[in-house]
Length: 519
Image (cartoon, rainbow, N blue to C red; front, side, top):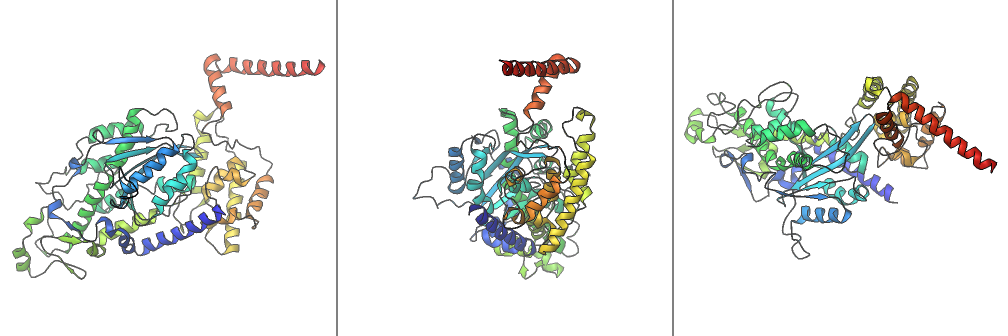
């Protein structure tokens, strides 16, 4: 059974992620932390590295993946590079994939609309259109193995927001072994929040950052389910992945150097966070609090061997003795606390499969889906009843949450292993009667609801039907046809006239039916 096999694979992938969270150094053994085992990280040589050396979005080719055939070619090119064949498939090793996603997010309707990818094997960007014919159903089989492969590092920005949960919800995909550039920037800032991607790119020398900011302002909250997509919308999507691989190396450099600066004896601990000769803009600010990013970008050449020797305190990190040249091998990486913290937090974000990370408790009335539905229903723009969340829906939601707790105690598992609060909120609104309807919200159902030999889906269904509530549409489209027709009629005739028009149409239909019966 394919579903049972995939559920087993998911559990194995979750266990692997949990290991990476607890022992982040294990994740480095799969890909040497982004370094080949025979290579090293020369910090002085990286002093002049910034995003200006990366091939720009404008100068990089891209491909829109809107067929299953193109998706297969895309995966092969990501794995083996362009122009591969059976004899040279293993000449180029895929070790890093940068990814981002664009979602339609309105009330309980959250769906993936674009997946953007680039890799270390290709100077090319890929924009996958899941809404194109046949592509949605093919994504799990073709992209799933890339995202679950621990030897391939997945690089994203703010992956714990919606990216990880959307991949799991829509395609049953887990992200195994990741690096989150947002979390890394948070550690460098020494604050709770990280920098937005445009601000981070500006800080690290992206010359077209103003254009990127302009695109972000225009398209970050656009309706991504509309087709066709404009060239500028696609350009914005590419900006979100084009620089991530190099950004990771820059952040990795500064996290390591920050650790080393903290270990420098008296006389070296007053090094400016932003060296005057650095190419970076020391006024780069975060999007939320305006705090500066703590970037240890001072020139290492200023820390001479003689000055270290005179201090009487050699620069050491764990069992590694650091020379002034600061040549870091792959095996040295686990000794750097701040870098390893960024790795561990990034891995933890991969467990955020349904709004909350596994093992985290959440107040049912603070769930973001629930709050969103309440707000949408109370919104003045919702006068036409797009979202009809009532007190009855809330009562059903709380009753289902209590049922979830009971099942978790019965099975001796975490409540999130039964199902997520997001799913219960959706169920309370849509009132599904079959497992196939549940899959419209979550591609791979939780094992306790999927297993037909267990009573839990039937118990959920019994609670739903006991409320005698009118069912909301369970269509997977983002707006119903009836709502679209009503809006069109309102636009043409006005609201009062449209009611008369609809009433007249209904009467005409009834008259036709009665006439046919008489005949």
